[in-house]
Amino acid sequence: MTSAVPSRLTAIRLEACSLWTLAWPMLVGQLATVGMGVADVAMTGHASAQDLAAVSLGTAVWTMVIVTVIGIMMASNSILAHEAGAGQHERIAHLVRQALWLGFGIGILACLATNSMVHILDYLGLEGNDEVRDKAATFIHIISLGLPALAAYRALYAYSTSVHQTKPIMLIALGGLLWNIAINWLLVYGHCGLPPLGAVGCAVATASGLWLMLGAMLLWIRHAPAYRATSPFSRFEMPNRVEIGAMLKLGLPIGVTYFAEVSAFAGVGLLVARFGVVTMSAHQIALNFSSLVFMVPMSFGIALITRVASALGERDPVQARFASWVGMGMSLSFAVFSALLIVLFRRQIAAAYSSDLQVQEMAQHLLLFAALFQLSDATQVAGASAVRGYKVTRMPMIIHLVAFWGVSIPLGCILGLAPQWLAWRPSAPMGAAGFWIGLVFGLSVAAAALSWLLDRISRLRISEA
Image (cartoon, rainbow, N blue to C red; front, side, top):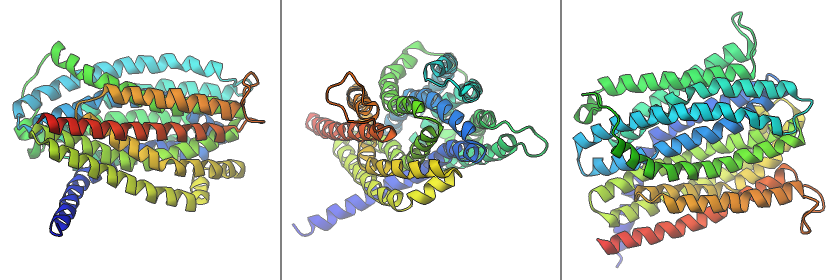
Protein backbone atom coordinates (compact mmCIF):
# COMPACT_ATOMS: atom_id res chain seq x y z
CA MET A 1 0.00 0.00 0.00
CA THR A 2 2.79 2.43 0.89
CA SER A 3 4.70 1.64 -2.30
CA ALA A 4 1.60 2.36 -4.37
CA VAL A 5 1.51 5.98 -3.17
CA PRO A 6 5.03 6.92 -4.37
CA SER A 7 4.33 5.01 -7.57
CA ARG A 8 1.18 7.03 -8.13
CA LEU A 9 2.97 10.29 -7.35
CA THR A 10 5.74 9.36 -9.76
CA ALA A 11 3.21 8.67 -12.50
CA ILE A 12 1.57 12.06 -11.87
CA ARG A 13 4.95 13.80 -11.95
CA LEU A 14 5.94 12.11 -15.22
CA GLU A 15 2.61 12.93 -16.87
CA ALA A 16 2.81 16.53 -15.66
CA CYS A 17 6.33 16.81 -17.09
CA SER A 18 5.20 15.37 -20.43
CA LEU A 19 2.26 17.76 -20.56
CA TRP A 20 4.42 20.73 -19.65
CA THR A 21 7.09 19.79 -22.22
CA LEU A 22 4.39 19.84 -24.87
CA ALA A 23 2.56 22.89 -23.52
CA TRP A 24 5.24 25.45 -22.71
CA PRO A 25 6.32 26.30 -26.27
CA MET A 26 2.64 26.59 -27.19
CA LEU A 27 2.15 28.80 -24.16
CA VAL A 28 4.87 31.17 -25.30
CA GLY A 29 3.36 31.12 -28.78
CA GLN A 30 -0.15 31.76 -27.45
CA LEU A 31 1.09 34.58 -25.24
CA ALA A 32 2.88 36.12 -28.19
CA THR A 33 -0.24 35.85 -30.36
CA VAL A 34 -2.49 37.36 -27.71
CA GLY A 35 0.29 39.83 -27.02
CA MET A 36 -0.49 41.32 -30.41
CA GLY A 37 -3.93 42.24 -29.10
CA VAL A 38 -2.45 43.44 -25.82
CA ALA A 39 -0.03 45.66 -27.73
CA ASP A 40 -2.93 47.07 -29.75
CA VAL A 41 -4.90 47.98 -26.62
CA ALA A 42 -1.93 49.25 -24.62
CA MET A 43 -0.46 51.38 -27.42
CA THR A 44 -3.77 52.92 -28.47
CA GLY A 45 -4.57 53.50 -24.78
CA HIS A 46 -1.62 55.88 -24.68
CA ALA A 47 -2.65 57.51 -27.97
CA SER A 48 -6.20 58.61 -27.01
CA ALA A 49 -9.34 57.37 -25.25
CA GLN A 50 -11.17 57.51 -28.61
CA ASP A 51 -8.65 55.23 -30.30
CA LEU A 52 -8.78 52.81 -27.36
CA ALA A 53 -12.60 52.78 -27.50
CA ALA A 54 -12.47 52.14 -31.27
CA VAL A 55 -10.08 49.21 -30.81
CA SER A 56 -12.32 47.91 -28.00
CA LEU A 57 -15.39 47.92 -30.24
CA GLY A 58 -13.55 46.54 -33.25
CA THR A 59 -11.95 43.82 -31.16
CA ALA A 60 -15.35 42.82 -29.75
CA VAL A 61 -16.56 42.07 -33.29
CA TRP A 62 -13.27 40.65 -34.59
CA THR A 63 -12.80 38.34 -31.62
CA MET A 64 -16.17 36.63 -32.13
CA VAL A 65 -15.11 35.63 -35.64
CA ILE A 66 -11.46 34.79 -35.01
CA VAL A 67 -12.18 32.48 -32.09
CA THR A 68 -14.93 30.70 -34.03
CA VAL A 69 -12.43 30.07 -36.84
CA ILE A 70 -9.86 28.74 -34.36
CA GLY A 71 -12.51 26.46 -32.86
CA ILE A 72 -13.50 25.00 -36.24
CA MET A 73 -9.87 24.37 -37.14
CA MET A 74 -9.18 22.79 -33.73
CA ALA A 75 -10.82 19.58 -34.96
CA SER A 76 -7.54 19.00 -36.80
CA ASN A 77 -5.70 18.76 -33.46
CA SER A 78 -7.58 15.71 -32.20
CA ILE A 79 -7.81 14.04 -35.65
CA LEU A 80 -4.10 14.37 -36.38
CA ALA A 81 -3.06 13.41 -32.83
CA HIS A 82 -5.10 10.18 -33.11
CA GLU A 83 -3.30 9.32 -36.36
CA ALA A 84 0.08 10.22 -34.86
CA GLY A 85 -0.59 7.94 -31.88
CA ALA A 86 -1.41 5.13 -34.32
CA GLY A 87 1.74 5.85 -36.39
CA GLN A 88 -0.19 6.55 -39.64
CA HIS A 89 2.34 8.88 -41.33
CA GLU A 90 0.88 8.90 -44.83
CA ARG A 91 -2.57 9.47 -43.42
CA ILE A 92 -1.27 12.48 -41.47
CA ALA A 93 0.16 14.08 -44.62
CA HIS A 94 -3.14 13.60 -46.47
CA LEU A 95 -5.18 15.09 -43.64
CA VAL A 96 -2.94 18.15 -43.35
CA ARG A 97 -3.42 18.90 -47.05
CA GLN A 98 -7.19 18.69 -46.61
CA ALA A 99 -7.04 20.84 -43.47
CA LEU A 100 -5.26 23.55 -45.45
CA TRP A 101 -8.05 23.56 -48.04
CA LEU A 102 -10.58 23.79 -45.22
CA GLY A 103 -8.61 26.61 -43.60
CA PHE A 104 -8.49 28.82 -46.68
CA GLY A 105 -12.19 28.24 -47.34
CA ILE A 106 -13.23 29.00 -43.76
CA GLY A 107 -10.93 32.04 -43.69
CA ILE A 108 -12.47 33.61 -46.80
CA LEU A 109 -16.01 33.06 -45.49
CA ALA A 110 -15.00 34.51 -42.12
CA CYS A 111 -13.52 37.58 -43.82
CA LEU A 112 -16.82 38.25 -45.59
CA ALA A 113 -18.82 37.66 -42.39
CA THR A 114 -16.62 40.03 -40.39
CA ASN A 115 -17.11 42.85 -42.87
CA SER A 116 -20.87 42.39 -42.80
CA MET A 117 -20.84 42.64 -38.98
CA VAL A 118 -19.70 46.26 -39.14
CA HIS A 119 -23.39 47.26 -39.19
CA ILE A 120 -23.64 46.17 -35.54
CA LEU A 121 -21.91 49.43 -34.67
CA ASP A 122 -24.95 51.37 -35.88
CA TYR A 123 -27.11 49.94 -33.08
CA LEU A 124 -24.90 50.60 -30.06
CA GLY A 125 -26.10 54.08 -29.16
CA LEU A 126 -22.89 55.79 -30.26
CA GLU A 127 -24.57 59.06 -31.23
CA GLY A 128 -22.11 61.87 -30.69
CA ASN A 129 -19.19 59.43 -31.03
CA ASP A 130 -19.00 59.30 -34.83
CA GLU A 131 -15.20 59.36 -34.72
CA VAL A 132 -15.12 56.24 -32.55
CA ARG A 133 -17.66 54.49 -34.79
CA ASP A 134 -15.78 55.30 -38.01
CA LYS A 135 -12.42 54.23 -36.62
CA ALA A 136 -13.89 50.97 -35.31
CA ALA A 137 -15.44 50.21 -38.73
CA THR A 138 -12.16 50.83 -40.55
CA PHE A 139 -10.34 48.70 -37.97
CA ILE A 140 -12.70 45.79 -38.69
CA HIS A 141 -12.45 46.11 -42.49
CA ILE A 142 -8.64 46.02 -42.45
CA ILE A 143 -8.02 43.40 -39.77
CA SER A 144 -10.47 40.96 -41.42
CA LEU A 145 -8.01 40.55 -44.32
CA GLY A 146 -5.82 38.44 -42.03
CA LEU A 147 -8.47 35.74 -41.46
CA PRO A 148 -7.57 33.41 -44.39
CA ALA A 149 -3.96 33.42 -43.18
CA LEU A 150 -5.03 32.70 -39.62
CA ALA A 151 -7.23 29.72 -40.56
CA ALA A 152 -4.52 28.13 -42.73
CA TYR A 153 -1.94 28.77 -40.02
CA ARG A 154 -4.12 26.91 -37.50
CA ALA A 155 -4.15 23.85 -39.79
CA LEU A 156 -0.34 23.81 -39.75
CA TYR A 157 -0.38 24.57 -36.03
CA ALA A 158 -2.46 21.42 -35.42
CA TYR A 159 -0.10 19.38 -37.60
CA SER A 160 2.98 20.62 -35.77
CA THR A 161 1.55 19.90 -32.31
CA SER A 162 0.38 16.42 -33.34
CA VAL A 163 3.96 15.42 -34.23
CA HIS A 164 5.22 17.12 -31.03
CA GLN A 165 6.97 19.98 -32.84
CA THR A 166 5.85 22.92 -30.71
CA LYS A 167 8.98 25.09 -30.59
CA PRO A 168 8.49 26.36 -34.17
CA ILE A 169 5.06 27.63 -33.09
CA MET A 170 6.70 29.55 -30.26
CA LEU A 171 9.39 31.14 -32.42
CA ILE A 172 7.02 32.11 -35.23
CA ALA A 173 4.52 33.64 -32.80
CA LEU A 174 7.28 35.64 -31.12
CA GLY A 175 8.30 36.93 -34.54
CA GLY A 176 4.70 37.94 -35.21
CA LEU A 177 4.55 39.81 -31.90
CA LEU A 178 7.74 41.75 -32.63
CA TRP A 179 6.39 42.64 -36.07
CA ASN A 180 3.10 43.82 -34.51
CA ILE A 181 4.83 46.03 -31.95
CA ALA A 182 7.14 47.56 -34.56
CA ILE A 183 4.35 48.34 -37.04
CA ASN A 184 2.15 49.68 -34.22
CA TRP A 185 4.97 52.00 -33.16
CA LEU A 186 5.28 53.29 -36.70
CA LEU A 187 1.60 53.64 -37.55
CA VAL A 188 -0.24 54.29 -34.27
CA TYR A 189 1.96 57.24 -33.28
CA GLY A 190 3.21 58.23 -36.75
CA HIS A 191 6.98 57.78 -36.40
CA CYS A 192 9.56 58.01 -39.21
CA GLY A 193 7.49 60.56 -41.11
CA LEU A 194 4.37 58.38 -41.31
CA PRO A 195 0.95 59.82 -40.40
CA PRO A 196 -0.46 58.81 -36.96
CA LEU A 197 -3.25 56.33 -37.69
CA GLY A 198 -4.20 55.31 -34.15
CA ALA A 199 -6.62 52.36 -34.12
CA VAL A 200 -6.33 51.87 -37.89
CA GLY A 201 -2.58 51.34 -37.56
CA CYS A 202 -3.24 48.47 -35.12
CA ALA A 203 -5.41 46.72 -37.71
CA VAL A 204 -2.69 46.98 -40.37
CA ALA A 205 -0.10 45.59 -37.95
CA THR A 206 -2.20 42.59 -36.89
CA ALA A 207 -3.45 41.62 -40.38
CA SER A 208 0.02 41.79 -41.92
CA GLY A 209 1.47 39.90 -38.94
CA LEU A 210 -0.92 36.96 -39.52
CA TRP A 211 0.20 36.59 -43.14
CA LEU A 212 3.84 36.80 -42.03
CA MET A 213 3.27 33.97 -39.52
CA LEU A 214 1.63 31.75 -42.14
CA GLY A 215 4.54 32.27 -44.55
CA ALA A 216 7.07 31.48 -41.85
CA MET A 217 5.26 28.27 -40.85
CA LEU A 218 5.04 27.09 -44.46
CA LEU A 219 8.77 27.62 -44.95
CA TRP A 220 9.67 25.92 -41.67
CA ILE A 221 7.60 22.80 -42.37
CA ARG A 222 8.90 22.66 -45.91
CA HIS A 223 12.58 22.63 -44.91
CA ALA A 224 12.86 21.34 -41.29
CA PRO A 225 14.06 17.70 -41.03
CA ALA A 226 11.61 16.92 -38.19
CA TYR A 227 8.66 16.99 -40.62
CA ARG A 228 10.09 14.78 -43.38
CA ALA A 229 8.44 11.55 -42.25
CA THR A 230 4.97 13.10 -42.51
CA SER A 231 5.58 16.03 -44.87
CA PRO A 232 2.28 17.30 -46.32
CA PHE A 233 4.04 19.06 -49.21
CA SER A 234 5.37 15.92 -50.90
CA ARG A 235 2.54 16.14 -53.43
CA PHE A 236 -0.50 18.20 -54.36
CA GLU A 237 -4.10 17.17 -53.68
CA MET A 238 -7.43 18.64 -54.64
CA PRO A 239 -10.05 19.10 -51.88
CA ASN A 240 -11.64 15.86 -50.70
CA ARG A 241 -15.29 16.40 -49.81
CA VAL A 242 -15.47 13.38 -47.50
CA GLU A 243 -12.40 14.32 -45.45
CA ILE A 244 -13.31 18.00 -45.21
CA GLY A 245 -16.87 17.04 -44.28
CA ALA A 246 -15.57 14.85 -41.45
CA MET A 247 -13.42 17.72 -40.16
CA LEU A 248 -16.38 20.07 -40.28
CA LYS A 249 -18.60 17.57 -38.49
CA LEU A 250 -16.15 17.53 -35.61
CA GLY A 251 -15.02 21.16 -35.86
CA LEU A 252 -18.29 23.06 -36.25
CA PRO A 253 -19.52 22.18 -32.72
CA ILE A 254 -16.15 23.37 -31.38
CA GLY A 255 -16.52 26.58 -33.36
CA VAL A 256 -20.01 27.11 -31.96
CA THR A 257 -18.66 26.35 -28.48
CA TYR A 258 -15.96 28.98 -28.82
CA PHE A 259 -18.46 31.41 -30.33
CA ALA A 260 -20.85 30.91 -27.41
CA GLU A 261 -18.15 31.84 -24.91
CA VAL A 262 -16.46 34.65 -26.78
CA SER A 263 -19.67 36.17 -28.11
CA ALA A 264 -20.86 36.37 -24.50
CA PHE A 265 -17.76 38.39 -23.63
CA ALA A 266 -18.00 40.41 -26.83
CA GLY A 267 -21.71 40.95 -26.30
CA VAL A 268 -20.96 42.32 -22.85
CA GLY A 269 -18.41 44.66 -24.45
CA LEU A 270 -21.01 45.95 -26.88
CA LEU A 271 -23.63 46.39 -24.14
CA VAL A 272 -21.14 48.18 -21.90
CA ALA A 273 -20.58 50.72 -24.71
CA ARG A 274 -23.71 52.60 -23.64
CA PHE A 275 -22.04 53.53 -20.33
CA GLY A 276 -19.44 55.73 -22.06
CA VAL A 277 -15.83 55.76 -23.17
CA VAL A 278 -14.35 55.37 -19.65
CA THR A 279 -16.41 52.26 -18.85
CA MET A 280 -15.75 50.79 -22.30
CA SER A 281 -12.01 51.28 -21.93
CA ALA A 282 -11.88 49.89 -18.38
CA HIS A 283 -13.88 46.82 -19.42
CA GLN A 284 -11.54 46.21 -22.34
CA ILE A 285 -8.48 46.45 -20.09
CA ALA A 286 -9.85 43.86 -17.66
CA LEU A 287 -10.96 41.57 -20.48
CA ASN A 288 -7.73 41.95 -22.41
CA PHE A 289 -5.53 41.11 -19.43
CA SER A 290 -7.77 38.18 -18.52
CA SER A 291 -7.36 36.88 -22.07
CA LEU A 292 -3.60 37.11 -21.67
CA VAL A 293 -3.64 35.11 -18.42
CA PHE A 294 -6.10 32.63 -19.96
CA MET A 295 -3.42 31.54 -22.44
CA VAL A 296 -1.77 29.37 -19.77
CA PRO A 297 -4.75 27.06 -19.09
CA MET A 298 -5.61 27.21 -22.79
CA SER A 299 -2.12 25.95 -23.66
CA PHE A 300 -2.54 23.14 -21.14
CA GLY A 301 -5.85 22.40 -22.88
CA ILE A 302 -4.33 22.21 -26.36
CA ALA A 303 -1.59 19.94 -25.02
CA LEU A 304 -4.29 17.85 -23.34
CA ILE A 305 -6.00 17.27 -26.68
CA THR A 306 -2.76 15.84 -28.03
CA ARG A 307 -2.01 13.73 -24.93
CA VAL A 308 -5.53 12.28 -24.67
CA ALA A 309 -5.96 11.67 -28.40
CA SER A 310 -2.51 10.06 -28.69
CA ALA A 311 -3.30 7.72 -25.79
CA LEU A 312 -6.57 6.74 -27.43
CA GLY A 313 -4.77 6.23 -30.76
CA GLU A 314 -2.50 3.81 -28.88
CA ARG A 315 -5.65 2.09 -27.49
CA ASP A 316 -4.92 3.05 -23.88
CA PRO A 317 -8.09 4.65 -22.39
CA VAL A 318 -6.74 4.34 -18.84
CA GLN A 319 -3.80 6.58 -19.72
CA ALA A 320 -6.16 8.96 -21.53
CA ARG A 321 -8.25 9.39 -18.36
CA PHE A 322 -5.14 9.78 -16.22
CA ALA A 323 -3.71 12.45 -18.53
CA SER A 324 -7.05 14.29 -18.48
CA TRP A 325 -7.17 14.67 -14.72
CA VAL A 326 -3.51 15.56 -14.36
CA GLY A 327 -4.08 18.32 -16.91
CA MET A 328 -7.15 19.52 -15.03
CA GLY A 329 -5.12 19.69 -11.81
CA MET A 330 -2.30 21.66 -13.44
CA SER A 331 -4.73 24.12 -14.98
CA LEU A 332 -6.56 24.70 -11.70
CA SER A 333 -3.30 25.14 -9.77
CA PHE A 334 -2.21 27.89 -12.11
CA ALA A 335 -5.63 29.56 -11.82
CA VAL A 336 -5.19 29.95 -8.04
CA PHE A 337 -1.78 31.53 -8.60
CA SER A 338 -2.97 33.92 -11.32
CA ALA A 339 -6.01 35.03 -9.31
CA LEU A 340 -3.76 36.07 -6.42
CA LEU A 341 -1.45 37.99 -8.77
CA ILE A 342 -4.34 39.90 -10.35
CA VAL A 343 -5.69 40.92 -6.94
CA LEU A 344 -2.28 42.05 -5.68
CA PHE A 345 -1.16 43.92 -8.79
CA ARG A 346 -4.43 45.24 -10.24
CA ARG A 347 -3.32 48.87 -9.77
CA GLN A 348 -0.13 48.34 -11.79
CA ILE A 349 -1.99 46.38 -14.46
CA ALA A 350 -4.49 49.20 -14.99
CA ALA A 351 -1.74 51.83 -15.13
CA ALA A 352 0.17 49.86 -17.76
CA TYR A 353 -2.83 49.99 -20.09
CA SER A 354 -3.99 53.59 -19.73
CA SER A 355 -2.82 57.00 -18.54
CA ASP A 356 -6.39 58.10 -17.79
CA LEU A 357 -6.98 58.07 -14.01
CA GLN A 358 -10.73 57.44 -14.34
CA VAL A 359 -10.10 54.47 -16.61
CA GLN A 360 -7.49 53.13 -14.20
CA GLU A 361 -9.83 53.34 -11.20
CA MET A 362 -12.69 51.49 -12.90
CA ALA A 363 -10.34 48.90 -14.41
CA GLN A 364 -8.97 48.05 -10.95
CA HIS A 365 -12.51 47.31 -9.78
CA LEU A 366 -13.30 45.07 -12.76
CA LEU A 367 -10.00 43.20 -12.40
CA LEU A 368 -11.26 41.82 -9.08
CA PHE A 369 -14.02 40.01 -10.97
CA ALA A 370 -11.45 38.84 -13.51
CA ALA A 371 -9.45 37.31 -10.67
CA LEU A 372 -12.54 35.57 -9.31
CA PHE A 373 -13.40 33.71 -12.49
CA GLN A 374 -9.87 32.41 -13.09
CA LEU A 375 -10.72 29.23 -11.17
CA SER A 376 -13.83 28.28 -13.14
CA ASP A 377 -12.38 29.49 -16.45
CA ALA A 378 -9.28 27.32 -16.12
CA THR A 379 -11.38 24.31 -15.11
CA GLN A 380 -13.81 24.60 -18.00
CA VAL A 381 -11.15 25.04 -20.71
CA ALA A 382 -9.15 22.03 -19.48
CA GLY A 383 -12.28 19.90 -19.20
CA ALA A 384 -13.54 20.87 -22.64
CA SER A 385 -10.13 20.20 -24.22
CA ALA A 386 -9.81 16.76 -22.64
CA VAL A 387 -13.31 15.86 -23.87
CA ARG A 388 -12.35 16.98 -27.39
CA GLY A 389 -9.41 14.58 -27.21
CA TYR A 390 -12.09 11.87 -27.08
CA LYS A 391 -13.58 13.37 -30.28
CA VAL A 392 -16.70 14.43 -28.37
CA THR A 393 -17.73 17.97 -29.35
CA ARG A 394 -21.53 18.28 -29.33
CA MET A 395 -22.12 18.04 -25.58
CA PRO A 396 -19.48 20.72 -24.77
CA MET A 397 -21.22 22.91 -27.34
CA ILE A 398 -24.59 22.51 -25.60
CA ILE A 399 -23.02 23.12 -22.19
CA HIS A 400 -21.38 26.35 -23.32
CA LEU A 401 -24.51 27.62 -25.04
CA VAL A 402 -26.55 27.08 -21.87
CA ALA A 403 -23.87 28.45 -19.54
CA PHE A 404 -23.16 31.65 -21.43
CA TRP A 405 -26.38 32.48 -23.25
CA GLY A 406 -28.71 30.88 -20.72
CA VAL A 407 -26.92 32.14 -17.59
CA SER A 408 -24.20 34.77 -18.19
CA ILE A 409 -25.94 37.17 -20.58
CA PRO A 410 -29.43 37.12 -18.97
CA LEU A 411 -28.01 37.52 -15.46
CA GLY A 412 -25.59 40.20 -16.64
CA CYS A 413 -28.39 42.19 -18.29
CA ILE A 414 -30.51 41.98 -15.12
CA LEU A 415 -27.70 43.15 -12.85
CA GLY A 416 -25.98 45.53 -15.26
CA LEU A 417 -29.01 47.25 -16.80
CA ALA A 418 -31.72 46.74 -14.13
CA PRO A 419 -34.54 46.86 -16.72
CA GLN A 420 -37.66 48.64 -15.51
CA TRP A 421 -40.03 45.96 -16.77
CA LEU A 422 -38.45 43.30 -14.53
CA ALA A 423 -39.93 43.02 -11.03
CA TRP A 424 -36.89 41.40 -9.36
CA ARG A 425 -34.08 43.72 -10.41
CA PRO A 426 -31.42 45.74 -8.54
CA SER A 427 -32.51 49.14 -7.27
CA ALA A 428 -29.96 50.72 -9.64
CA PRO A 429 -28.01 49.40 -12.65
CA MET A 430 -24.67 47.90 -11.63
CA GLY A 431 -23.12 48.71 -15.01
CA ALA A 432 -20.07 46.74 -16.11
CA ALA A 433 -19.74 45.05 -12.70
CA GLY A 434 -23.17 43.43 -13.12
CA PHE A 435 -22.15 41.92 -16.45
CA TRP A 436 -18.93 40.55 -14.96
CA ILE A 437 -20.88 38.87 -12.16
CA GLY A 438 -22.99 37.18 -14.84
CA LEU A 439 -19.83 35.96 -16.58
CA VAL A 440 -18.50 34.47 -13.35
CA PHE A 441 -21.71 32.49 -12.83
CA GLY A 442 -21.75 31.26 -16.43
CA LEU A 443 -18.15 30.07 -16.25
CA SER A 444 -18.90 28.23 -13.02
CA VAL A 445 -21.82 26.39 -14.59
CA ALA A 446 -19.65 25.39 -17.58
CA ALA A 447 -16.81 24.21 -15.33
CA ALA A 448 -19.06 21.95 -13.24
CA ALA A 449 -20.87 20.45 -16.24
CA LEU A 450 -17.70 19.77 -18.24
CA SER A 451 -15.97 18.13 -15.27
CA TRP A 452 -18.93 15.77 -14.94
CA LEU A 453 -18.92 15.04 -18.68
CA LEU A 454 -15.19 14.25 -18.72
CA ASP A 455 -15.56 11.83 -15.82
CA ARG A 456 -18.47 10.06 -17.51
CA ILE A 457 -16.84 9.74 -20.95
CA SER A 458 -13.46 8.60 -19.65
CA ARG A 459 -15.05 5.91 -17.47
CA LEU A 460 -17.20 4.75 -20.37
CA ARG A 461 -14.20 4.36 -22.69
CA ILE A 462 -12.40 2.25 -20.11
CA SER A 463 -15.40 -0.01 -19.60
CA GLU A 464 -15.78 -0.41 -23.39
CA ALA A 465 -12.13 -1.42 -23.71
